[in-house]
Image (cartoon, rainbow, N blue to C red; front, side, top):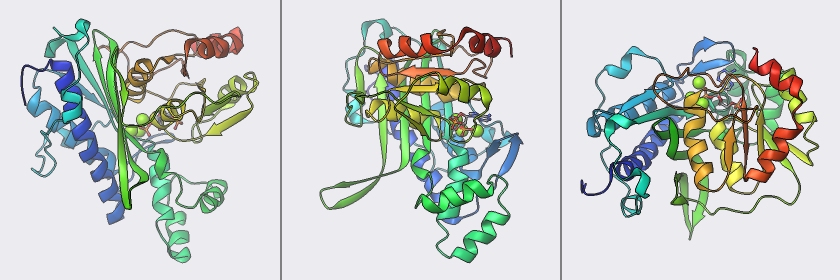
Length: 346
Ligand SMILES: Nc1ncnc2c1ncn2[C@@H]1O[C@H](COP(=O)(O)O)[C@@H](O)[C@H]1OP(=O)(O)O
Ligand SMILES: [Mg+2]
Ligand SMILES: [Mg+2]
Ligand SMILES: [Mg+2]
């Protein structure tokens, strides 16, 4: 790879390639059917796919950019261990390498960068998706009975949803410079499309500040107010913030990455999540891409999150994102002060 290409552009090109490799790992673990679910906390799970995809991403980026601080969601001792050659990805996406680097990022050094990695965003939806891959209803029922995550209500909604919610699963790599998200990648391993007669699985969306976004066709926001929010981590505060929006429709989907994709594709205009739960690796890449497309992501109080290495991981004061500043203002003004204070003092 040419070292004359500025570092941030090279890193984004490498991140696009490695996100695709991680997405294949996510699909492979699912196909094998041994998810290896570990409970990290309440409503908080990890699978073999989360662990392996993270090892692949961190080992591949560290091999090429040894001085960059890379922070991943999954805290497992294995991350330091051996990574099979098949996982090490040192390719770089050619289209990204040819992008013009914005002037303010041209002199950036490895030491100025923090990369936030969510190897699998939408773990709840991933584990529930496993169920729907069991074609035999008796096998599916047996798996449900031993599944730690699913209530009977969810099981019934899964049965109605054909393949479950695997499309909500994404791999997120966010690049921050001096605490600000400047570039990012959202890879969607289960996105399905037809190119000519050929069935393609997976797609990779990227964004770079002052340059723009790629990997998909952006669409204008819907004519009426459509809100996207959590389907697996709701609570009374989350619901209160939704009630006050006066929305025409509320979409309940998994993952921070997928919700921001819905904003970019014109399926929703605002993302509201008035609760702690998301962490820096959930929002860094989506925020960078949304910014590059002219949108805005803050907490519920309208404050920007910072992405330096020493910040606390949780996004305690929730997420408020919109396709443009006007819709962001609208949503921010609708949220009662009392609700904002409740979150701030949690
Ligand atoms: N209470 C929570 N506990 C753990 N992770 C959470 C929680 N709330 C949100 N998240 C993370 O933020 C993402 C977006 O939330 P939601 O899908 O509820 O809108 C989730 O997919 C999950 O990321 P991950 O799946 O990577 O652990
Ligand atoms: Mg998680
Ligand atoms: Mg996540
Ligand atoms: Mg995750």
